[in-house]
Amino acid sequence: MNSQRHTGSAARRFVTAVLALFSILLTTDAFGAQKKGSTVIITLRDGRQASGELIAVKPKSILIMDPAGKDASFDLTEIAVVKVFRKSKAGKGALTGFLIGAGAGITTGILGAGTGEDSGFVRGMAAMFLGGIGGVVGLVGGLIAGASASGELDIRFEGATGLSLKADLQKLTKYARYKEFR
Image (cartoon, rainbow, N blue to C red; front, side, top):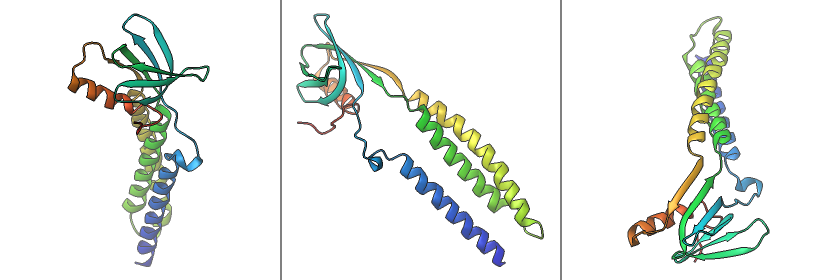
């Protein structure tokens, strides 16, 4: 009876440690890194193009920083299309999926193994086996989900009405360095 309580306690501590590690790894602010805006290519109505990092989306203009470090502002009435190059999230998705899958598999192996004389060995083997399988399944699922969340996004401003323009600006704001910029 004591060994079951101890194992359950160890399983809870393990799951807590995995969740703590998971939250630390996914927090970029913990390492002091400033989030950069996505790379964009702005095509103007007259056919000219400008590219750079998306700094901010204002109610009437878009601010980017070109590769040379110069700021450029474009009025929304001049813009035809903004192409956003979203950063790949495949690595982060794979890591997240692996941690979740392995944690779930190990927890299932620890809690699902039988009791008895060899229960410690059986629980350990079941935890390792199910943790490995869960980790691989989670890795593949996270890799697919992360890869599908990246790629190019075209936002058309030419001919946009007030309501669709507001929705497009909100969508574009997600990819800017500064989200709240007035």
